Image (cartoon, rainbow, N blue to C red; front, side, top):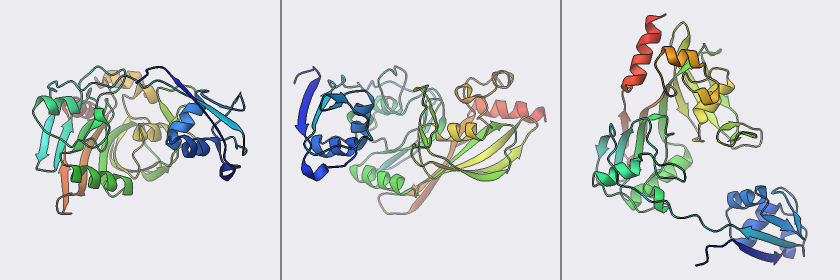
Length: 312
């Protein structure tokens, strides 16, 4: 197979007259709508020789020219033990993992650190072969800088049914986070769409054209400088809690990417955001019975909480 970029050209059929460019590309070339939009955003799509945007409308008979980049080299899974990773539960269908901070869910371009997938492989666990090669068995993720509970599918049945539960938002995912200041009201919902930050593409932001994102929060305890919140997610966008808390002007303590005060993080001896996935509940794929798992705060978060409590 050639590793060079490919140029493909097709005329717009009559049946796609007036369609958005990304929708037409998806129909004509077999891309996902997301991939089509990415190609347009990268300037890889031309209509009758002129670069076009993803939301432009196409005319029947116009020629669409698409530059398809060469596929990236496959990401390799390295079987490497992960210090501090704990198996909370294992059966024939699922593994529930307590992921430490500094560990990615799976390999990705540019990440050379430890992964949950690599840690499980090193420990001899067999997991589902469903999903992309570098993330087989992974049905949801946690940020590298977020610790806590993840479920990994061992069987193909488990992968399919767990993915369905996440899509239908029936999984009970709960987090605790320490945020700066005191949210008003103390209990509430953030319903604000999230997408890539318009100028800083390494982070995310509330953007009007983003994907629907809903976060519920509830006060657990208020301290002089911060508040400990219980978070329940309806959706699972990248950095969702961090972005929504920042949008409330109460960023997660220690989250310098999203506007947290570095002096407070230093005082609490934190080198990451105070955010932990404390609870996970779902219907077990083997029999439909509801199962629940909990995780205690890791040492760095517990110590930070002790310090801020002693100052209040």
